[in-house]
Length: 196
Image 1 (cartoon, rainbow, N blue to C red):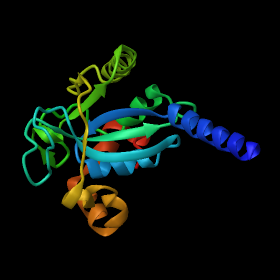
Image 2: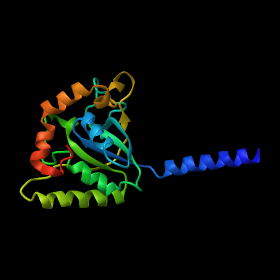
Image 3: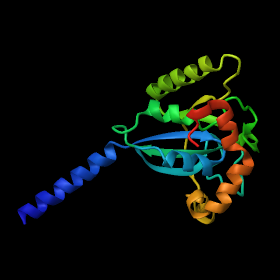
């Protein structure tokens, strides 16, 4: 009985420890299908959820009202395997930081890029990361803002098909991504640093 109790306590503490070592980041980079697909390939990322953030409307929906919100992803990652800085390095080469109208073929405020920071440490890292991109492209204006994190609303209910869309609908997803010109534009900006 005592060994069972010790085993249970040990298992619970290990579970807590593993959850405690997970961090989250919220990033917007246009189509959340693409952001989800891109970040799930990064070593150290354990989960990516599509949703909305940045607006004032509660419980925004894809087919309903999401005015003022960005399409975004909430990334859960293991900081012992990938740092917040490394997440941002990866983020930049998967977006067009110069597009003030949206991302690739998707235009409008919900498709704008943005980094949502949860604290001053993240803000400092994000600002350093953005400054590095600005120095790399001195003749272009980097329009991606660094914003305070707000409530993240995962896509759910009848719209849950948006989660893991690239896995569940690979033909439609790949056709959309190619037709949108995402990878072509990323290659134009980032060359062989682009992840596709």
